[in-house]
Length: 391
Image (cartoon, rainbow, N blue to C red; front, side, top):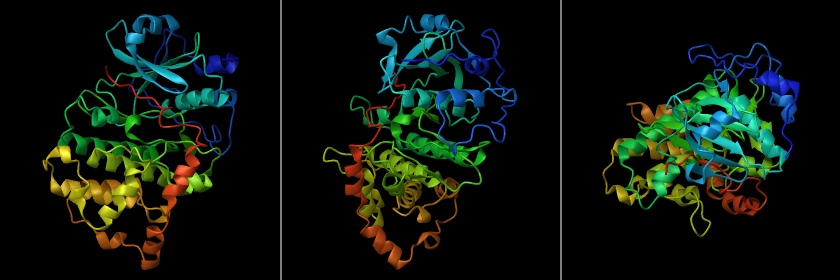
């Protein structure tokens, strides 16, 4: 693999190894006219754009030796995640801090994957929210590495679907759902630039020791300029069972793309089911008719044994039913999703009622088969993504 070692790369990690910025220093967004997501750029251009003197990220540049020592020589025993182009190792720094080191594997010869890796730096370097994973730093010695705070509880997927673990209680599920919604709302509305994640799913939501959810893996993320309504993207990338129909059919990406995927995540949290079952039926196609009939409790995970707050369940299920609508026009924004999930007033169902013709179109949309048909051409399969699961 060719690793980029230009002067622009050195400027990106300008801040000499011994210097790191304090966490209370203001994070300044990319300058206007800088890293525009309206164009596809190669890794060198991404780095040159990101290296503006006005950008002062709050992460440090680690040496390879620091990471080598922290992970015990990248010992297989410390590997906590593996994907198609990267591996994640648990490590302990000299000061005792637990970290997760994401390493671009040397066997990956896909330059686009290298670009995704660098895109993650450019995105996370200017994101700061308790429900978005914190980037501690990077390393460019002997490869490309991203360093994160270690998520001791692993991913939502690992806790929900590990048969050896006890079933996740309702209080924790609700906390994860609301926290993830807050993180996604931040990315869409409160960031200096609008960020579309493009791969929201349970394995990309990590959990702290207090079960606080943190959205991770920004390799597919896109900046969306304020004057743009959407992106048109080729090739289609993502995970089967989570892709909005307008995305896998036309390559259209905007905030509603993430909203659809969040709806699937909500269903996964509520039901305990995986996004796709053994027969390739997606979770949203299974749940939609049940929710449309108003049989909310039929969707709840039977392992909960009825131990859930029915009002919270109703709100989360209703939010999910809106998020997974085939037409993006009739999906809520994340601001509206949060309102539905958390406010105490009655849900205004009439506000979200679609015209009869739209409901009929929704019923006969039939995008399930189309999604499966596209599956073979995806660049990123369900097994190509990473989570820093605890061991």
